[in-house]
Amino acid sequence: MVSTTAHIFFWIVFGVFTLSSSWFFFLATRLPSHQREVHYITAAITTIAAIAYYTMAADYGTVPAGPRSFYYARYIDWTLTTPLLLLDLLLLAGADKVRITWTIFLDLIMIVTGLFGGLATDNYKWGYFVFGSVAYIGILYELLYPVRGLAATKSQALGKLFDQLAILTLVLWTIYPVVWILAEGTNSISLELEVGLYALMDMSAKAGFGFWLLHNRVRVEKSVEHV
Ligand code: RET
Image 1 (cartoon, protein in one colour):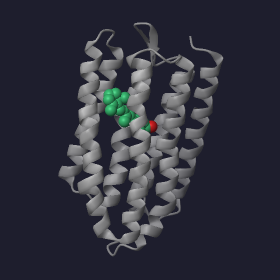
Image 2 (cartoon, rainbow, N blue to C red):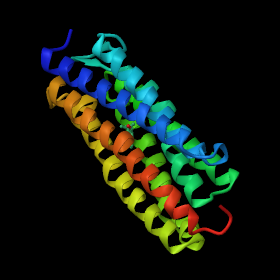
Image 3 (cartoon, rainbow, N blue to C red):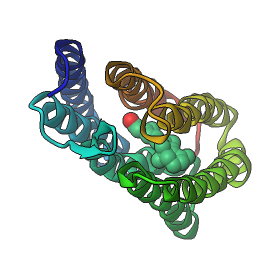
Image 4 (cartoon, rainbow, N blue to C red):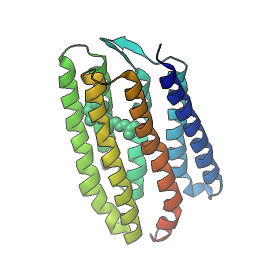
């Protein structure tokens, strides 16, 4: 059982994700169906997160791991949603199937090793952390070099939107392994602080990212010939 504070966080975030999913689906209906792809992906991301937060608010999706409770529900959420977040960025830049597959493969390695590391109660957890971090560096390389370069060739406006979203992603995503070290890794912050930090990061990385992307995308893609 976690504290009331943690429960309040879970329910607030559930509400935020439910409202943002509804808004993203609504925005999709205002577009011709062939332009809805990114809207549906983004709405799926926040819908999955809403269900994960509902699960945690209901006190499910957690197991004891050593000295603290471990929320494996996050990792099921992230296994589904982080590939979709990357897909949003990769499609925006016009990446090909090989690059999409490779980047998502790295992402799955990162999340699944984080899950195993979080469940491990001895120092083997740090081996998993290293595997996950290597995969993460691979993702950052892909986004900041080849994919960014591709986005810049499409149009100036698209290159700029990609840069904004990639910076947001880089900054927010890098906080996750830091919180992981403090919470799952070394048990040096309280469960409430862990829940609060992940909640703020999840809302920014999914709902904040989604708003930014969807409210700019149609305008920006008009500047690219093929749309
Ligand atoms: C772990 C531990 C292993 C090493 C690394 C990690 C990175 C996790 C990240 C998670 C991002 C989650 C997002 C959720 C969306 O709401 C798995 C913590 C590098 C980057 C964006």
